[in-house]
View 1 (cartoon, rainbow, N blue to C red):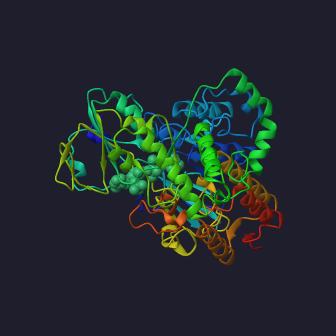
View 2 (cartoon, rainbow, N blue to C red):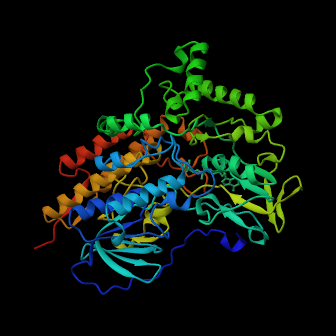
View 3 (cartoon, protein in one colour):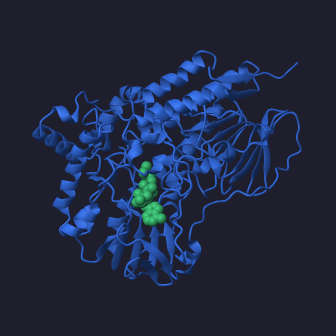
Length: 558
Ligand code: NA7
């Protein structure tokens, strides 16, 4: 590890696309990204017989599960549920070893998927699409990569991920630090060892909460710099027994069907009562049961109004704070770790393994940045507003992502009339059904903004989008349509609908990445559809059934 390994946020350059334009594009489809979404999209487009290429910036497939290889990285949705459903054979042959899969196990699964479906031959690794320009006369995209390659393609599918564009904190003096600087989302693939080191971790979202206990096991000293305390629940992770795996596999056909009908892509009992209509004893017992179960959905779905009624929400928030106070020995540290001022669930809650107890270790210190913000990075550490210099050997940023829109706005995407996607979305994303933005025809986004995406089990939402996009492309091609675009009226209505639904919840009460609030200057717009994956799927299917309402389909003029 050295300072040169500090990750960089990829910047697009405004190089012109150098392609000799012909009437026929060189490819039928380009997919950007070879994570879960890109792999499945390639498989399906190939199934249509389309000439498809995937460009992937990483050195291997896997997307977010390739990059986020920090210690403790793990999915917070159960492994038997967070996996592809499209192949019953795959469901039967792959064996998950734990309730919550680690990043290496998920990456092994994605390698298996890539190999099993022979996907690698159409994936170009270490290559970033930096520019895409729509040719309005020929109805296709002209694309340029950072390796100097240019291609043309009828369709462009952005499967570039919601958690892929790294958010770097910008502290003065950042480049003066003499030691290694790491980011959880660009973790080195060779083994890191913190033995004997003094380590600073900045950030206490899901990544920080997962990494901190493991870094503390090795480090000589660990100082955690916390801006906002997280609500974290114990994962109660454990190995799966052979009998459990067999039972899951036997029930997969029904389970996968139920997932597709569900609100969030996880199958769980839906609540019927308000948290305020039961006694305190009953409520506490329900929260305790959810706490013991170690499932985010169990506590979020314990009552109907957790995410819509501040008073109801406070009952669960207070329960979690009481748990923190019961685990953390030092009352002042427990109080600093206790989230206040924003409702539970409005920032992504975390699942942890030993997170709070880590602060009971004598070599672990918590610095509350609300009391003493970081003023600068020095060659030897971090200086906080109280004038103290915290001396460290390694800095770990667990500062998250420019989520959901970051990877769509990083390349120069130029649509009709020379308008860029950045210009069009300057005040926030606008699109029809979270799939197509008017003026950017034949460009689909997988689990992009204004779809349920990050509020759901991503694999289920990815499959829904990929299947809708594939069916749409098949339909266009079979009916001689060369261009699909969103109508400005439909996308204005959809964007307003998504905003209105979010405004009816507690989500806007937190400065979360769901709202872009973690990135200075990013428009404060709720980025996901809160109406449920079931309702959303129905809206997408209804549009398709009725001849793609809300979209215009164009055929070449005679
Ligand atoms: P998150 O959840 O965005 O967490 C990032 C953390 O870093 C969070 O505690 C932030 O505090 C903190 N942060 C960000 N910028 C700064 C600066 N400048 N100074 C101090 N602290 C900062 O990212 P994760 O990688 O943990 O998880 C992302 C998602 O991946 C997660 O939700 C799951 O869906 C999987 P803040 O809360 O903004 O005050």
